[in-house]
Amino acid sequence: MESPPSASFSQAVGSDPLSEAMDWVDNLRSNNVSPIKKTPEKVKQILIDRGLAVPSLSMIHIFEDNKGALSIAKFGNFNKKSRQIRVSVHFITDLIKKNVINVVKIDTNNNVTDIFTKSLGKVKFVKHRES
Image (cartoon, rainbow, N blue to C red; front, side):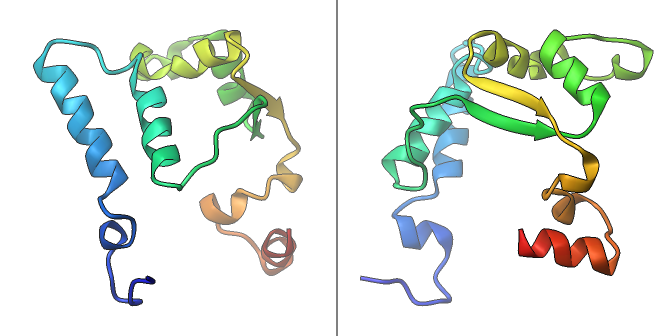
């Protein structure tokens, strides 16, 4: 049975997967277990269980147009400008080493995610909208 348009996300899928994941992380923290290593797998499993994600059989490709972000992700390179980034957030480097994800350099003019992150002119907006 379809939910009415005014129904919340949690009503549509039975429970809110994000809340469920956050409860799981809080439970780990209360038991002094680091959630950083286990969180991505648990969140992925919750989304798969709810039918909101499909298990991937191949490597995930992430397209990045920023050379600095690409360098930090691939090699964990830190410099003066990146020192404020917490080390615990750099689990992407581990995922790259395990061949779970692949970060690929893309030309900034071909990065369709710019429509979500940048103020674009009309021509670029229409180009990305049509992609």
